[in-house]
Image (cartoon, rainbow, N blue to C red; front, top):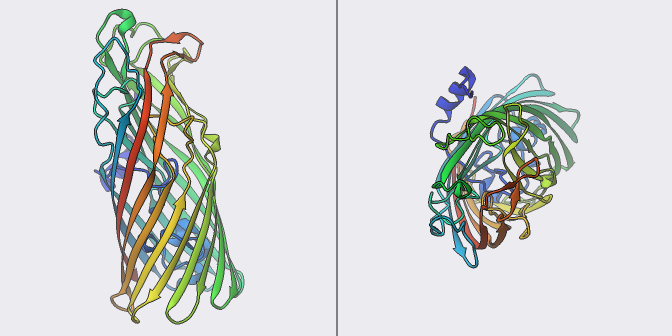
Length: 434
């Protein structure tokens, strides 16, 4: 049975009500501090403008003096629609519609704290959401036997240290404790039993651990380069499957009401960034980020009742991705800085392996932002980005499927068509030095 531990309850109170919609490749979230959104997060591993560098490159803390707190909130509005072409629904039941709008409004918070240990060593703590996903169709849509709701939530607690070796080199190290919770629902085809369709909900959570490393090299007084790595985090989710269909409860390999496990690996990333102070007015920022999505091959939910049999399995076959971004800053006055940026973000999913649970595609970011130095100690940032998401084709044939023992399972239908989508992000940030 799945029980809420005290630590989960505390997290739930702190982050209650927030929903996630992935806005980077796969189900990664780039929204880690609002100051970088106006540049489409170009230069994120080198800019070191505030304590949000704890996530992007902890070595950047050596460029910050004293104690600093950063609080940010990101509002993400997504929209997405499925356009049916040649789908073949499960014939025993009503076909259903196209699923409605998959989008939603999400609110994602971040918090970062940094302080000096001495002139060479800095300490920081970040609390953020590196991964997240939510897609939800109408319950009676034509692809409901493949997916209805897919949701992933994460919270990452990331204490970090930075060391300034000399005027050219800075290094950083952090450790991550990441909580993940996943929920997957779908309809269940019971036509072989001559019964009406039912449904199943799979839900589980776990803590996983990882680390991040970073280095910054000050090439000239006006130019620096940053290199940052975040390790994979392996999650062994435990929870339960639940369904109104109880007639199979006595059969360990068929029951839909059972304890479950699922392995999920959140991928490693490697980022290379540059930041150049061109003159008293202009800055130029750039970034390339690689993400190792290729290890996400299969999403399997296993019964934890001694049968070693899957409740459900989805073949993914994702690809590694690159994200490219370029941004500029313009100092309009001594207290007002204007930002803009563009990014091209590759999707991990190709047309041959796209599924209804995560139907993403390549996207282009166009971003604007501003930073207002309210006082010597306090700064406010705001950023906005619109994401143009490339049309996504899908041809997911699950009319013939098998369980983990090779036994045939009832049809889940063929989904054929395309997805159209876009997203808007509005971020706000408060930074205080004390």
